[in-house]
Length: 180
Image (cartoon, one colour):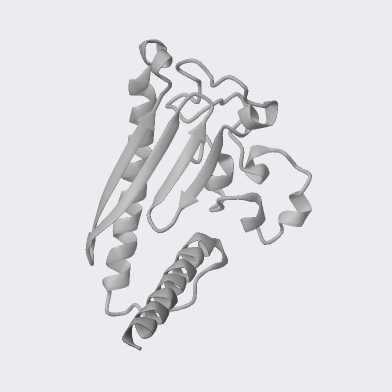
């Protein structure tokens, strides 16, 4: 994935994750902007589209190659130029999570699309992400681990923490009102 989206290879998710982002604010090279590598069009094994591109996309949307939307607590949606992917995470226990990924294609595109190429790439990315999450979880279970502060790059995790705190506060307020 970091070969397809070069900014990921720098350990960053977006331009503003770079502590020195202002130095590269006007640089649209993918390693600074977060776009796809030169010549790539979508998330697939070879970076090429394998079916019809959605009509009505602007040149900027096509150049970006992906647009993310997050629905807390446990889902994100990625719009690519030729398909949409949804990923849902459902906790099944303290150390067990169910992950469901779906690839959505326009009905008229199904016969024309090399779905296997797209799904194989997405599955590889999900498996690599799962493997590193498992390594991280093992580290957290180590007796040498002490909880600490979040790194600046963990802003999505911080946003999730804030979401949980907000829901918890709402629950406490509702429960207190009900008890009166």
